[in-house]
Every structure is written in C-alpha cells, then in structure tokens.
Image (cartoon, rainbow, N blue to C red; front, side, top):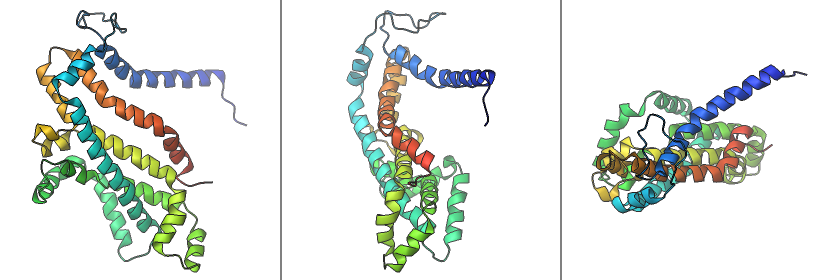
Length: 276
C-alpha cells in the first residue's frame, strides 16, 4: 500500500492553504470593504481587514441609488431562460448524439467540437445581427437566447448518456420502447448528476455575463444586475464601499445557489452522471 509521508502531507496542506487564501481573500476583502463606514479610512497604507464600525448603510444606499432589485429580477429572468434551455435542449441533443443513429451524426459532433475552439468574441457580431433581425434587441429574451443551449453542456450530457450501458437500451428497444420512452425512463434517471452540473454552470454563466447584455440592452429598465451595477462606478467612483456592496449583492445569489446544489454538483462529477 502506498503511504504518504508526513512531509508530503504537510506540503499538500500548505498548497491547499495557499490556494484557499488566493481564492477566498478577494471575496473576504470585498465583504469587509462593503461593511466599513465613511469614518474609516480605506486608503491608509496599512488598512484594517476587520471593519471598526460595521454597518449595512452601504447596501441600503446602493438600493436607494439604483433599482438594484429590478436589475436582479431581470437577471433572474435571463438565468431562468438559460437554465431551462440548457436543461431541456442540452439533454435532448446529448441523448440524440449518444444513443440515436442517424446520418451526419459524426459531422454534427465535429461541428459542436469546433465551436468550442472559437472564443465568444469571434461570433458576438453575428449573434447581435441575428438577435436584431429577430426583433429581440433590447429584450431579456435576446440576452438569454445565445446562451440557451451551450455546446459544452451538450457534450457533457452526451458523455453522461454514453456511460449508460448499451444493454439497457437494447432491452428497451426489444420491448418496443420509443426514443422518448428510453430518454424518460432510462436516460434521465441516470444522468441527474450531470444535469445538475449543467444547471449550475448555466445559471452562473447567465448571472455573471456582462459583455453580451451590455451590447444588446439599451433601455436602463431592462438592464441586468451586472450591467446596472456599472452606474456605481461612474456615480460613486470615489467611494469603493458602495462598489463593494454592489459587488456582494451580485455575488451572493451565486453563492446561495452553489451552496444549495453543491452536493448534486460533486455527485455528478464524481459518479460520471450515472448511478452505480
């Protein structure tokens, strides 16, 4: 049996601690800044990490200055459309690529893989022209449409369906099951883990997106939260406390969603999206 020496074990913990500090410290610093009052000097050479006089006034002032809850509602609408589109579209497409035999399947799979090579900025102009031609410019549906089915999510679901033993499909076909019945009764129960992974990725991507909503939306009433918070940078550029408070308001929903679904996320990654 392989044994880990005490020195190697200590090195692992040191590296893990270093990664933890690098990833969590910016979040904690933003949280600390958002809770500091105007009486505290945040520009001093040796700033204090813990607020001397913690206050929630910065959050209240953000809500009074911009319609932050309206922007958050717009972001939720976009995220809901993207999540629903990926949960349904990526599942159906992944099942078709993994379990159905049709002409051009390999070519279609190659095209899916090719789209992953291209960065999003390459196709953003064509996406805007398409959305505008459909009459969806300056709408929340126009913001959500390009991300409604992600190619990476399709490939993840394809991999999950491929992990299902072929014998199960063959037995269902012999019993006269249609493709929809196989998807419903055999496929979906075995890919719930990967479906939760796709759902989390889709929500985080839709909620955090900034460039595409900034291009599509022109009416401030339709702004998503990430776009609307930019008003704080212009109006309160001399008060980072409010900017930090707005950042935390934008980040907290992601943290809540991941905290609620994290067990499904790690289960899907660990099990390869199929029950043992």
